[in-house]
Length: 235
Ligand SMILES: Nc1ncnc2c1ncn2[C@@H]1O[C@H](COP(=O)(O)OP(=O)(O)OP(=O)(O)O)[C@@H](O)[C@H]1O
Ligand SMILES: [Mg+2]
Image 1: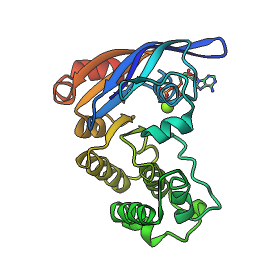
Image 2 (image 1 turned 45 degrees about the vertical axis):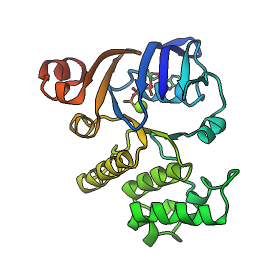
Image 3 (image 1 turned 30 degrees about the vertical axis):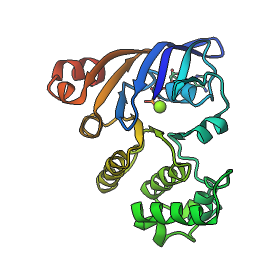
Image 4 (image 1 turned 90 degrees about the vertical axis):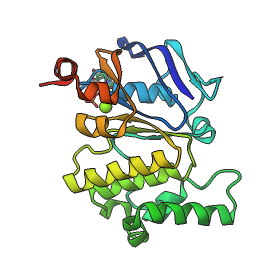
């Protein structure tokens, strides 16, 4: 459903991605692991049209979407939850969610359905719906960022380090949300620092090193492969 093919990307003159190739099938949860600075976030940004690839292609739903604007990709069903979450601090939870509803084809009944659905997924957000974004904890903001992405009814969500800086209890909740999304048929490309979480929720995992994908394996195989984990991810 989503594929990056031999993607090269630069920031100015620095060559960051050196031919990244990966794919995510419909409904599949795929992990993208790698040490700090190897280009994981850049890969997601390039998929989302925020970084223009110097070479290579992004294919979504059988269509070449290389260079397509981010907001158009969102309308096609590609959602992205960035590392820094980008919650609107002065807007309430409900208003933050509403930003994902302001698009064509979402009538009153549909809006109500979508809101009800995310409040079912995230009862905590329902409780805090009139509270300003800035007053939420880190974990609650992460939930809001995922919930806002769900408002777009995406086919796939690109999640960039959703558990970064969260307490273990919140990490568990994010994990449950990923599993619920998967059961609902939403595909996920998950960038994470947490190897155990990634191995637990993903079907397959890619490991990046210095701007390329170095290793690909089904999660169960990688769970049993300490040598690979130590080599690419170990400290
Ligand atoms: N806007 C930018 N301008 C210049 N260089 C950048 C920019 N963003 C990232 N880089 C550099 O590109 C490289 C890849 O960064 P990227 O954020 O994709 O890594 P990452 O794998 O997501 O790392 P982390 O695990 O720390 O989030 C790094 O060397 C980083 O310093
Ligand atoms: Mg990153």
